[in-house]
Length: 157
Image 1: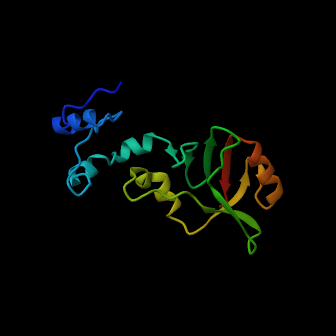
Image 2: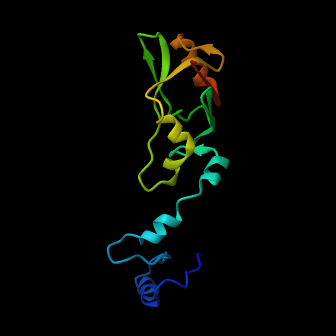
Image 3: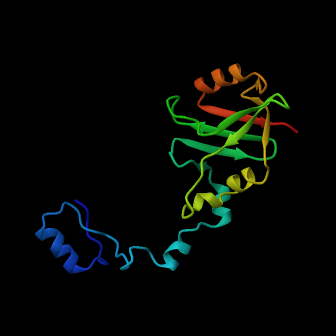
């Protein structure tokens, strides 16, 4: 059974017990239903903490471990999980490019992660290879990605 938070108003707890509610609120909420501005700023982690951590996508099954000008390395928990990294074929250059990555809500501190800032720093991330397969061979790249738990996207120079 969950312990009640001392911040919780006693009348709220009493009302919850009287109504036979299974759980009681643990956080006081302002009248408008939003947390105060100080709560929002306290949730933003420092840049050094962000740099030390891998970036976990919103679905929590895909993580980016490394992202620099040369490569992006991602991993997923299961081959049943989608990569959530969209690829598109650029017919002018005849190679794959990263077309999309998940977006984070404006209140999610992961949107400030250096990997997301790097992704947005270029209009297009053209690929040279994916897990050793040439990025101009769509079928081979897709077959490899279906079977892999780790993806290594090497960028064109």
